[in-house]
Amino acid sequence: MSDQEKRSVIIIGAGAAGLMAANELAGAYHVTILEALDHVGGRIQTLYDQKTGCFIEAGAEFIHGKLPLTLSVATQSGATIQEVKGDMYQVSDCNWKKLDEIIEGWDELLFKMGSLPDDMTLDAFLEMYFPGPGYEALRHHTRAYAAGFDLADPVRASVRSLYQEWSKEFDKQYRIKEGYEFIIQYLKRQCIKKGCRILTGKRVKQIDWQKEEVTVYTSENEKFFSEKIIITLPTGILQTPVSYASINITPLLDNYDHAWQQIGYGSVLKVVLIFEKAFWKEQHDKIGFVFSDEAIPTWWTQLPFEAPVLTGWLGGPSAVQWDEMSDERIIELAIGSLSKIFRMNFEEIISLLSQHYIFRWHSSKTAGGAYSYETPLSEQAKQLLVTPVENTLYFAGEALYTGPYAGTVEAALSSAMEVVKKIVGTG
Ligand SMILES: Cc1cc2nc3c(=O)[nH]c(=O)nc-3n(C[C@H](O)[C@H](O)[C@H](O)COP(=O)(O)OP(=O)(O)OC[C@H]3O[C@@H](n4cnc5c(N)ncnc54)[C@H](O)[C@@H]3O)c2cc1C
Image 1: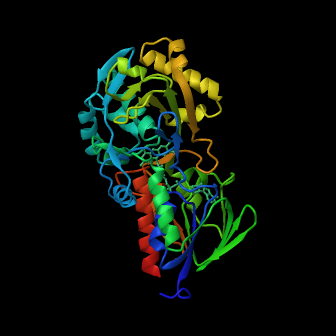
Image 2: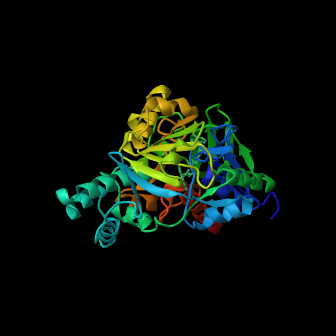
């Protein structure tokens, strides 16, 4: 196809979805990516800690099982895919219990979730199918797991969608040894090689459109033109009509605002602590994950990479309340949690702390949270949101994926592939 025959596409956002879509379309289309930040990757961002030689993941860290697209891109990029090692423990009131299943009663829980005739929220399901004091622990741990892992508010989360995901949960987990951003940088290089323009520091504020004619305005009043546009903004931004990164679309799209509200979007506070030594090895040599009821409840190590690094994770609705907290207070609560979990003196642990990283996703101006989860109304909403508007406007991104890997990089890559199919199918 000659250069003049090629049609033009603007993609807003250079996260996994935007770069994947660009990589697929570049060559056959003139592709321009407009990204608000000064770097690509969005919710995938890797830092390097010189002292420990450890990659610090601000966002995505794990590949949750044999996820086809993620592993395929990772393999093409030449990344080293490393299986996550270590044992899982539940710690309650200083008692350590090695876990073979995520929650005691997991099989019964999954069986009932899987046989549910109609979808409902997790809270309603637990009250109906696991009532009374005998199931109190199961209800508590299930809600905590949904909030912690899926960042889901149990009052809104869909049982059907959680079941799809949880029934795969015991798959192996993997990390990219060189850091998750390695595959993002690979996609970026591929896009550039194929002639795609990637413009960072371009925060889009306005889209004016009519069939096959789009004008995009940035916050600096620059104008870009194309025949088609793919919007890959995070749900947290699309759910908030007036915010730093929100975009005005003219003419407005009927029912879209309402549809975005039907998708759940969770937050997380991630704390990475670098210590002088791996003091937890005195408790157990092969700790992978620790789940607890402390202020920061979930912790993990870097195994199989031996590094004196612990990552703390506070997910779900409670992460939002921590957003305004100072770094000092967060560190205090983090060390307090570790002190209770490991039955060690607070001062002793803090004296071993050499460096910390805090990632507050709720207050990220360009993400407004961490990742999506489904409510019983999400499916219908997504049907509307993934339908191309006049073969001109398209939405993509992790939240628009329907399948068992909700909220993941796989979801972002898959949604990009879906949108590409639609664009290529309609010319
Ligand atoms: C803390 C955390 C941990 C996670 N852990 C995992 C994990 O272990 N495994 C996993 O698979 N997934 C994980 N995820 C989820 C995963 O990171 C996301 O699902 C995925 O990266 C989303 O990609 P995306 O392209 O849909 O969106 P994004 O990466 O958010 O890309 C959207 C882009 O749009 C840009 N943008 C926003 N507004 C504008 C604007 N107005 N103009 C121009 N550009 C704009 C943003 O800056 C961003 O770069 C995690 C996420 C977080 C936050």
